[in-house]
Length: 457
Image 1 (cartoon, rainbow, N blue to C red):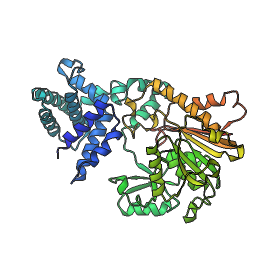
Image 2 (image 1 turned 60 degrees about the vertical axis):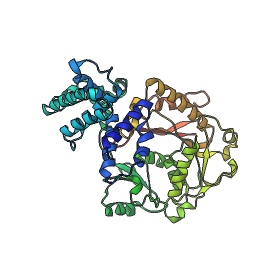
Image 3 (image 1 turned 30 degrees about the horizontal axis):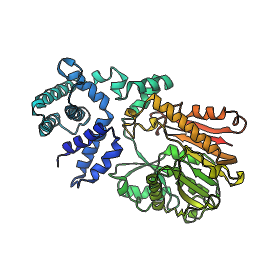
Image 4 (image 1 turned 180 degrees about the vertical axis):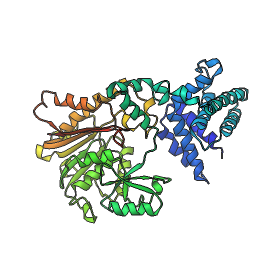
């Protein structure tokens, strides 16, 4: 099995069709039967790493092209081969430089570029020499965009908002190894039991730093192969998300609406909190209601899959006044739902969660290609969408109820500015107040970047 050719094919399709890695990598890997899990790990590392470091790699390609001229005219196939080769030389200590060079040359020939194989060989040899002479990194660190392989506009934006030192910490965090955070499903187990189960299988486990419901794990192969996954003993959910739901003030018996719910972590934790005591076997018998919504059938199916795995019974769809337990509905958060907004105040929701679509700047360490698909214009559009969703949420909440507005971005325009614009509207000035507001910064707070604001009606 030619793992480099498989990696190349995945990367080239991502580039050609302007896809996200998550759109293609997992499905592509499932089509192959790997006799050695190291093959799967190698392909994943190459695809994610080359994507993550694309700006840095292209800078080095330009630097080492003949006479230092721009390589904009380079064939896209050769550019991708060079990215892969340089990535292995610079960032993969397990791959000998000679192997990275020779395999890149062979890949060029295999793809029908025999005439350019000498160019590939010469450029990669020059890169390898520069690494041996400890010059390679000195070329990259001269600029923030090449040092952190992040678009210049985004580097400038973070410096403007947070200052240079904090911006650097945020950008550096995207290249660090991050533990996987799991939230214990207290409907089925407790933290100590799950921790023991993981440790018995040789998985490294640490307590969460923001929530007692969370564990941080590492040293495993696949989430779906983790002990307890199929039994629904846990769900993958970042601690900032868990912390946020815990701080809303959800009480047993509350009616909760989650407007943009997929993959459902917040909804399912809200369900635990609306139940009799939030833990143990009887927790599934709830006097409360959680309506978990999202815009498409695919997203609803993802929530349903997670809910069933966690042992949460999904109630059949009923009329709005008859909702009980845990329910799934397709709904567009950007469109006002009059079936809720026109209800009597007492029939509306005690809590409305609006985790709105955003630029994702808080999770660039986990989704390493978000930074290439974002712009200031798109972020401003997302801000307007967030404000629209927040206004809709205010029509669904009871008097004295609470709205939780949240994002996984660290862009103030999509976060606090949205909340303040909402509060400053004439109809809202004396009607709503902020209970709690917080921004988590990756590289600073030991978590993903995240924002939430709890608003009292």
